[in-house]
Length: 246
Image (cartoon, rainbow, N blue to C red; front, side, top):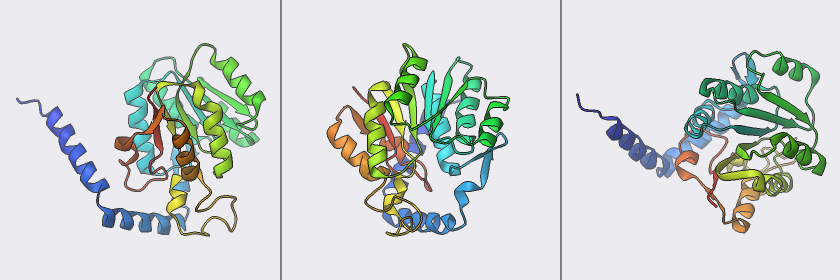
């Protein structure tokens, strides 16, 4: 029987490209996402019993990235309730490669820490509490990494331009060539102006997307991986998969 694996992959890539280029469809998807966000849709799910504040499409795209890369080090900045850390840990368990997950947050609440550390998939997880941009926290992480570099860095903490830009510059040299930065909440730039600023420090013009644009302008050794960034139809991370190319 004919092996149609390559044909199937080509078929999917062609359809993904057509869908990503359909401006009308993308606008409809964004409108749906804005309506869903009014009901905190992204808070609705859990991963292996731990709440995960991520959209289903983004979870699947991240899973594909981890499986393709077979990473040894994943660093997640922004722990919240811990589901994303456990997602990374569970994928490394499936790969069985001895990989490690580091979860950094300025405030890891005791009940969340307990839930993560008592989870059956947390043996390869190290939690670090502190400001992700402080020299002390970065130095501590570097000591923990030893000779290793970061394969995948997820930046999901404070979403202001200033903070994300500082994180991008603080951690970019710790990422190996071929490694990725995953940047959630770039979608803030496409939401209605004022949607977030009533109770948050970020909004249109001041968010991860604006920080990313500045960072890429100044760092030609990183570029957006459009094939991954455009895959999810309803996503927090448009243009949010960045690969180190040199």
